[in-house]
Image 1 (cartoon, rainbow, N blue to C red):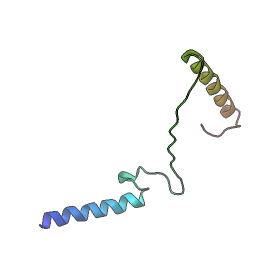
Image 2: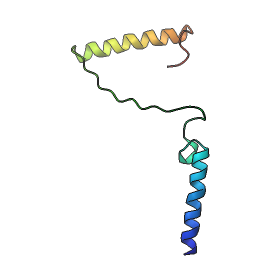
Image 3: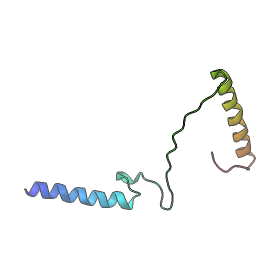
Image 4: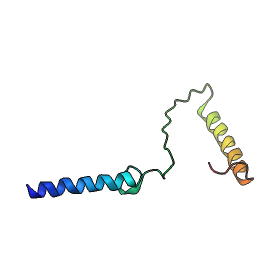
Length: 75
């Protein structure tokens, strides 16, 4: 029974550390004052896959250009 109590105590201490470190064990949670968001979406496109990838490549180039020019801080 003493081993069980030790195990339960260790779990409680671990939970406290996780809460202080951002909510996940090991401190891998979000930084204080930050939020994580999950976005789930489905893309429907009437063109070919090659056209879609070409559009995405052009948009990525434009975004990287804007970042390089200082118009966008991060992607």
